[in-house]
Image 1 (cartoon, rainbow, N blue to C red):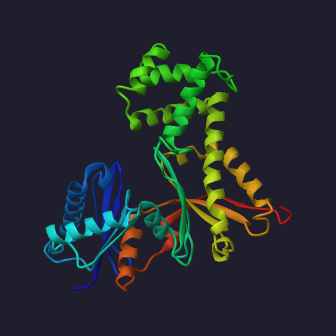
Image 2 (image 1 turned 90 degrees about the vertical axis):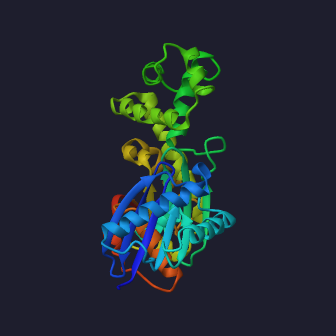
Image 3 (image 1 turned 90 degrees about the horizontal axis):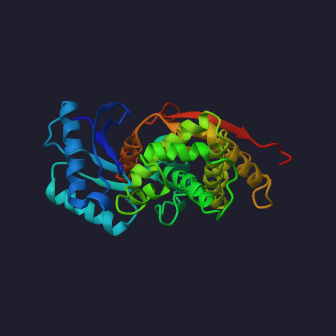
Length: 348
């Protein structure tokens, strides 16, 4: 039988599995619920993965009891080596016919591997935020990803919090708002179904739900599209702080990563990027400043922002195959869509 490789994209909300042939043909795709082991536990995580992969085997017309050549997993929460080793050990013990070989990496690295075999930057702005730079030699550095208590700047929760806090601070005469708060306050009251600021307290304490609070970001984007200046200001600030993540990892970028036709490739993941036009002015302003800085002048010549057209399960499958000395043919140009490019003037 021809070699079949598996890949998994394991997220904090939903997951996806994919079976791929060595020539790059996708044989089957299945979906499942959250598989972040920090959220659901190791047992539930590996059960979700096994269920998705076994269903994919049947969808592809394969024997469910025939192990895959490899299973490469791009998992949210897949950073710590001891946790990864525990996951793989339990997977081998509980599901011996699932795969011959296993490989686990983070969701960020899996995303980059779907987009390129030469590395790049992945900048995540969903509920939270995170940034990783992967060099061509495999070395990597990150900025962010610490959760809403310690960071997540530029993510949906951060955007929602900034808007709500601006309203609270204005009410208390603690900080003067940069613009009129009327429409943001109205949107807040409608979204959270409250009539005053005291009504917000259950949402901030007893009934606090991070995902629901972050969901206010979508409402803010809608108000911003109507022209509200404060909402537009909040998204501009989000664009700035997301670009600061790129600035943080840029000094470690190796020359081949900066000198390609695309400039620095930045893979943009997460729902907040749907509001790119609102983020754009703040984002581009910061990177213009970075390009003209003494540290990076002449090195940082341009960048391309792109989104994935395929699940990062495909990158996981590719990395899994590589880890055992095999390879999957990848059409990287078909896996991404470039939505913004910029080249800096040589005088910058």
